[in-house]
Length: 447
Image (cartoon, rainbow, N blue to C red; front, side, top):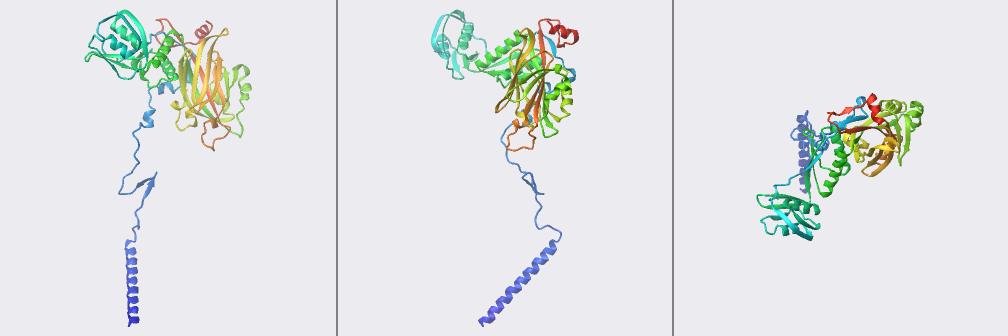
């Protein structure tokens, strides 16, 4: 009996399996044209199908790169008209004024006499001075300078101005609440000259002095900046110097990456037979690279024609920057170039002045090439007005950050720089920037 029961159970199991297999076969035949699974597309790690929308990871609330790099001065800064360049331009002298903003209301018309203070914080010195008035002293920022002095006689506004200057801080008066507010930072407006190159010179000088967050209104020619007492002093020096000097220097710049056509470096000595010795004025070695001072015969066009015989040449960046006579300025390659270039990190710094150089009228300049990792090389370059600079021999591998690269070890950076001189003339007859050429230019250079 037991044996018969086991046989029946086995028969039923086999029958069930056969039915199940038959059902599976029928189901597959019915599905025929339909895929067993939904088709899923993967695009840049974002899963998309007919029933879904793209899902992106949440990003922090940061300004996008395209908005971050927006700047009204870029069209003026990042283009050079090499076909219409003037080595000397005359502009009229204009008053440059710096005005402090947010000074509040005028102080009461009170007189101060025989007031003495010794080693007091500014807040304590003012509270002592105004003890018999309803004026309250409020420190918006803590101040640490102690001051000493005596005021024999004068107005309250003069006394407060003197004491805050001694403490290297600023004040503003709120008449409604009778409060003098003290702070270590201030805000100023500079009323700029009309000439845009002059504006660029002041901007570049301020940036060269590491003063940032500059707000420029190109319509009414004003600039607003914030800072502390030291910032104000630096800007005042720049403004005073620009106002007192008679020259501004500017450089037009092309930056190239050069790829030799063979497995060897470019033979720069071939410039001598190509252009003639009279067109190569000086050769100045640096820690890396070499600066050549060349005649106007060697310009961007003739330089490209020369290099094209040995290598391919790609323009990486182009632009212009200016500096008041004797000050420092800089040109950021990445600001006027494509962001994906290796050389984006490169900065060309320059200091220079025009004047007597051992009995000759020359532009005495120092050009520094640097990156965020430090200085690459520098060159001290004395040159005549009209001469150009060609900096060669800076390896492109200086900018490679990976252990290996596809870039040839013979590829190099070439910088072409053309100095310009802007002469500031004290006359009402010059109504706009006037380029000099021909006899006028010769007379100017021979003065």
